[in-house]
Image (cartoon, rainbow, N blue to C red; front, side, top):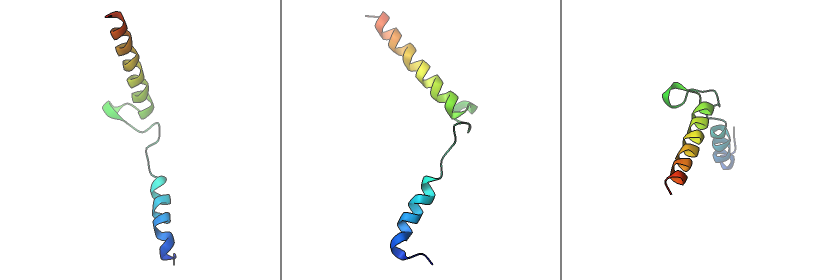
Length: 54
């Protein structure tokens, strides 16, 4: 049996292993990696749009 003082650490360690991988489907059915790349591209386009309007 696990010592009660180590139970929270064990829980945190097990939860830290949970999480999506880069290839898991993200928003709109694209991979998380692709969704991140699209977000970065949109941010660049927004920044360029602001610069052109000044």
